[in-house]
Amino acid sequence: MEVWVGTVLGMGEERAIRIVDGVVRRPAKPWTATVQGLLAHLHRTGLPVPEPLGFDDDHEFVRLVEGEAGAEDWPHGIGLAGVRSAGSLLRAVHDATAGWRAPAAAVWSVPHAGGGVICHGDPKPANLAWRDGSAVGLFDWDGARPGDRISDVAYALIWFTPFESDPDALRLRGLSIAAEDRRARIAALLDGYGWTGPFDVIEEVLRRREQAIDEVEWLGERGHEPPASWVADNWPTRWRAGLGAMRALAAEVEGWERGNPGRV
Figure 1 (cartoon, rainbow, N blue to C red):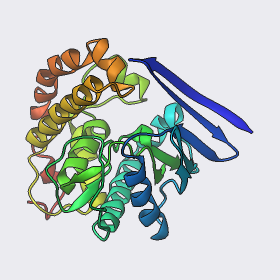
Figure 2: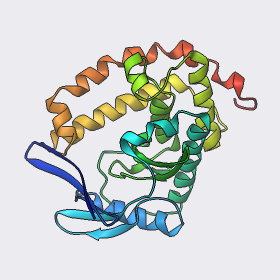
Figure 3: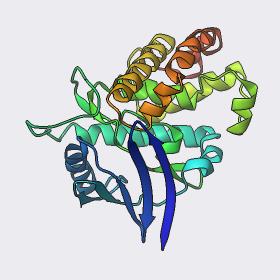
Figure 4: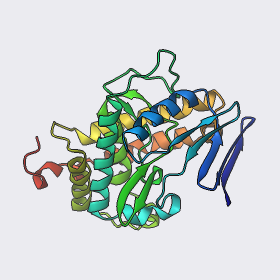
C-alpha cells in the first residue's frame, strides 16, 4: 500500500514524502549518508528510530517508525506522563549517540560548534511517534548535528511547555495552560530526561529559538525545502517578532523547581 504524505514546492526543489508498505521514501540531501550512518548505530542499540534502508542520488529510504504522529500526536502530549516519556526517550537517544563516532567526512545540515552528543535538532511532538499517551519513537533526523544535550532539551521545552500564549494555538493542541501547568510540564520533561543540573529555562529556550530561526534562514538561503519557502514567506521575521511574547512567559515558569525537590 502506498501513502502519499506531502509535497512542498519552492526554490526549484520538490520535497515529496511517500510511504510504501512501511518504507518511507524521502528526498536525499547532502547530509543523508551521515544521518543514515547515525540511524544505523541507534537502530542497532534497539532505539525506536527509523531503520535506514539506503539511498540513491534522489531519495533515501527508511523503515517507518510505528505509532501515531503528525496531526494525531497532540492528544498524546497533553498529559504529564506523555511529556515525561518524551524526556526519557530523548535522554536514551542522547546517551546512545555518545557512543558513536561520526566519520571524518560527515556532513550535517547546519553549522555547529560540536558537543558531547548528537542532537536530533527538532525534537517536537510532531516528530515523535506516540502510543497510548507515551512517546515510542523519534523520526525526521534531517536536523541532526553534534551539540550539547541542553540544546535539544531546550528545543523540546519550547513545544512541550509550551512557550505559546495564543489561546487559539493552544486550543488546537487541546491545551488550556495556566502558570502552574507550564511549571509542571517543564518539571515533567526534565524529570523524564533525568536532568540534575541548573537550568535557566527562559534564557536557554530563547537562545535555542533564535538559533532555530537562524538555521531556517541558513538552509533557506541555500535552497533547501521547506526552509526556502518559509524564508520567501518572511516567516523568520514573524518568528523573531514573537520572541518578546516568549520572554513574557518568564513569570509563569519562574519557580518550576519548587514543585520538583532535589533540583538545583
